[in-house]
Image 1: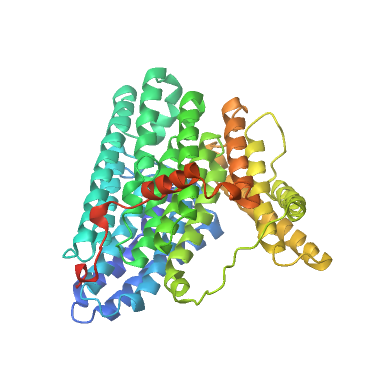
Image 2 (image 1 turned 90 degrees about the vertical axis):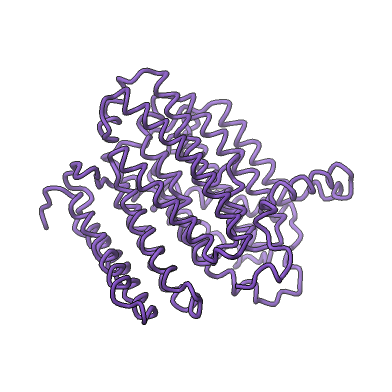
Length: 508
């Protein structure tokens, strides 16, 4: 076992291979960008392998001290593992996807830079450094989004994004600036240690601005417009953005978890805003005809759910969801081209019946039971752990319902039951592993169950029942339904300036 005096040095060394690959590509392969990009991709993959090695020997759990404004705690190592894996996949996918593009070399240079910048953001402990790399990462993301600057729609989507990010930067600067002024230090981990000594007004004001900054970064309501309008970017950029940079809002909230535990009112504000984001994103996703826009609305839903978990005080579960969402959303975006090319002539939607749904609910109970066993959580109606378990039951029921709509023989029901139990167990085990990893940070503190939580769960449950059993089908021709549909469809559209309405609008 290697003994490390300070894991921050080792974390910064993880960045050396991506940085070396980037520099080699920049300095030596101007005339052979394909080979240079492959070397840069190799640097990313070596960095990812190094993070796995660090977890294997237990480096993230050794002594953590601030070094040059950085501190590599357990969350930093978790995010580095996810960022490097997603970046490695996107790099590898882009080698062929971007082949022939006249901005091929610039694209890979920016992709390498944003990977390094995001890694440094995840480990930033000094408020000034945090703001610096927050700004740099967002700037690089906008440059990647625009890609072809001559394309008017892409340029306009980038302008909209940079305006939103600038507003988020103002929120972040005000929130962290107040903390630095009140505590007399720029170190985040020292501020968190002194958070109990801060006045309640400072804590509440800070958290309010931090929530706004996080939602502007993650495309949450009411800052969602930039996310829905960002789809002119190359598909690999969308994959990295939705699986990586959008998660920055969740990372920011997790960094301030100790203060949220002391201000339940702001935790409830976070929960309510996340609930609105989840519901709107879910409804908008179902009425989209464009696959990338559907995935963008899906990201809103998933970010809303992750933020809800933070509002419940279940930060390790939120980090676990962030991981799964990042991996799954990257896969969906990178596969979107193949999905469009598929021939689907038949309507795949099947009629749902009450008996089939009840049977699916029983399978969902097995999934929830597997989650409880895997996560080590205990079911109780006293705190917000019950909300998480309830959502796990809903997810397992939806999975079983999708399978049982195809076939309901005894053998198939048994297979579905085993599958539901297994997936619940795996997801619960993920939550358990991440909770164990971040245990030294003490960021898991379920809140007392309140009327706000119960009302939110009931609202989501009735919407979910309506989508599955379709009790409103007979009203689809009514005036109020059509008005609601058009209102939701219009609300989910990108900014008009970010749309290319005719083919000749894109000729680059």
